[in-house]
Length: 447
Image (cartoon, rainbow, N blue to C red):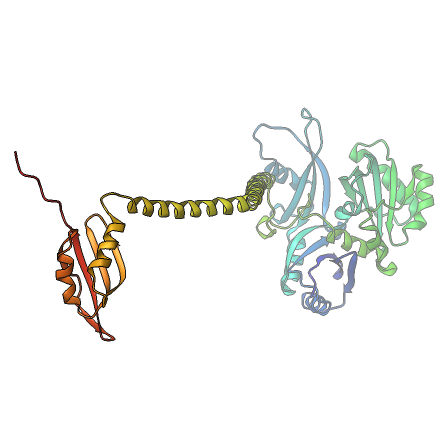
């Protein structure tokens, strides 16, 4: 299934369909002689895998009245209301049946409004919409098909006045273009090149032209009219200067249906909001207004700037962290050396503190060890000895731990000798832990 832009040209109960499927490809088919055109159209679209829910519809030029009218400039006037009021004298059907679209043509500020109006009867507008409803589709736009032919031209064309003569199925549409701008269209009844040249000459005063710069021919057997038109109008006659993107599509159209197929292609290539659109506003696909586009653009720019700022900040942060990581890696060996020196210094401070404690006069370590060696019997031995300023703690084993208490009490250095934990028996030895305080020197006699 393919999404496509589908253009449909409706002409005397015959549907010419061109679908642009992308990448320079198109589908072309014709629906005619069908009891129900809508159902047949839906079947053809399904058979070709075309999934577009909206279809662009182009009407034959004969079904619309197209006029360029002038309206006075009035402050605060509703131009659409003025056009509707003035249009009643230009159309051959009742005012309540008028469906019209209009676009204002360029002009000086002091001049009246120059307006190009296309009007059609109500049933002319509602018929194609009902047909699409039968095909379970909706209209993307509803316009006069030949008015969208300029969508096939190159955008960079020089500003010149040209007449586009397009032939299809025995009829001829005339478009009067000022650069890319459509200023008038006609459907004259001339059947040959000479009569068409006279129709062009008679139409020039209607658009306030004294002449034209070029004549473009397209459609069925258009080349045969070239020499006669060039001789009578005395202007260059050529094929339209199609845009490079559209020229291959035009060449791919079938020669036997070139006129109507080109109109369907123009409708498919038309802009989303053509100047002359008969489709009621309530049924048109939503398109943003100029103000909405400007607001959306400003929002987009703001978001882009915010993202750029955040992205820049992220890049700067990552670069800073990268430099910081590199510096850490560079300093890591030195940091490890410093940590090693700090650990060695702490160890040496502990050793020095132990030496200073050992040298403290208040704890006579060596004499205490000598006295304990002389005091303790040969059957006793020490596992640990802890001395501080309050006293000494002995841990070891002896044949009789209780016999050690009086021996230590008898020492000149110790007093208040006592067990700090119960005595236990191990391998015919008694395990002991004894705590003793330093003996305080006797005070001299008071004087």
